Length: 92
Image (cartoon, rainbow, N blue to C red; front, side, top):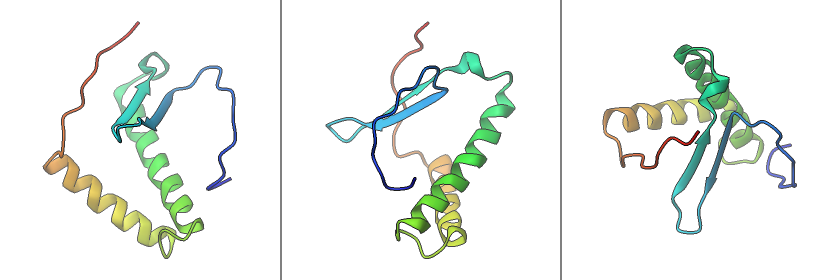
């Protein structure tokens, strides 16, 4: 369901992302669940489609295709000229 917030229990999440109170993005990844780096690319492609559908469904984009265009433009801009450098560390 897009746009609804309901508590869920995650037993073994691959990825959890959320905004902190200060607006910073916190991302937690369990890299042990990925068999190879290419899997990350597949997951990113799937995520962009889910984001595009959610944005269109909630009226934040006119269509999934329009959302994909905006997502890909922002992604390429961020890759070319990062707005920040991720911080943090690896935990075992």
